Length: 445
Image (tube, rainbow, N blue to C red; front, side):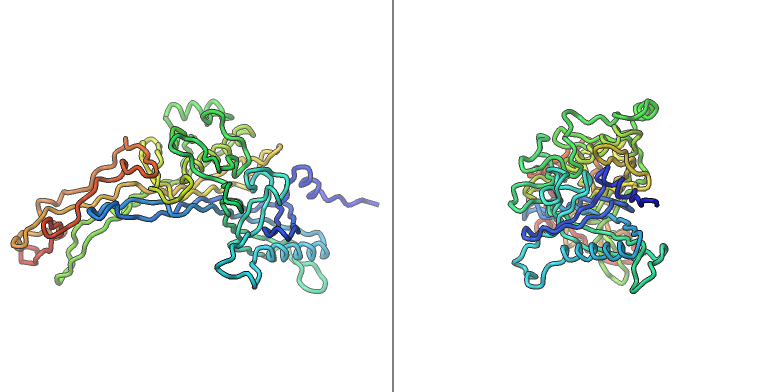
């Protein structure tokens, strides 16, 4: 008589490959546990900013940090061997949905929802440990949970519809601070490159910080190093004397430019240049690993990178700019990094060991230049209405006027430091008119 062996559970037990979910409410100690058959996994950071006038006497805007947020998006498959296991797993899924939704009597603006706690070894945790979901689970608010009855694998015969495989996708918003507000999963380095004292320091992968500057070449083969050194093929982010360095495996790169013009409607529209609305760069970086050592270094570098990019505690100061160097594309520019999305390649899998280390992942960056200058027209007296106007709407002698070029040597700016901001420009007034109201004549056509 053969004995059934659940090799899935045996494998998961040996590597502690479970995703565990618990209610965030202290009075509710129940948990749900799933084998970690990952279909997708990503972590994103977004920095919301607002623009404000520097003062009442000029038109220059500066960026201020408004909000920092982190999100997880992942999907798992839950295979079932028989109808009883299918019913059991569906019950577990329903329990997780119950954890995620607020109770009816507590849906008010005065109630701060405590969310759920999620633990998946070194990949999802609160940065203080990886062994217990109640102590080390990452506190999150569920944005959505989608359950798919995977019809490709069919259903078990019996009463009701019971799937052989469930596929569940999660979108989680991270609660960055703990209940007391004295610890944060991630805060930006200060201008000296030091950790904020409230930062747990080891989120998101529970890896110890670098004792010295991270070595991008750790685990790389000699051909990669020679190629990168010969062509200076590195991508570097820096702030506060700290830097995160990657091999420049750039998968995609794009530049976006948008401009603001004042429209004057005089039978036909004439446009006068006002300012550069946006100069942005988006690019994707691949981060492969040859072995476990390099994979560990890559993931530790991501921890380091998030703290270079994130605002410091107190999201009310001027946004800091980050030094970015990608020779030939971003030569020592100072940029606002608006968002970062780390997408892990689950198809390539992990290096086994004490922790799970991805063999490959990619990072999507969205950035903006700090250039946003007003393009001024020459002052025009009211009686000079017959001045010849080009079809662009600008005086002929000012057709070649442009904003200042990007200064590659501009240093990253710190919160409260406006040295990296554009030069203030005086607002239009009666004594200093800046706008031109063109007059149509036969010379315009």
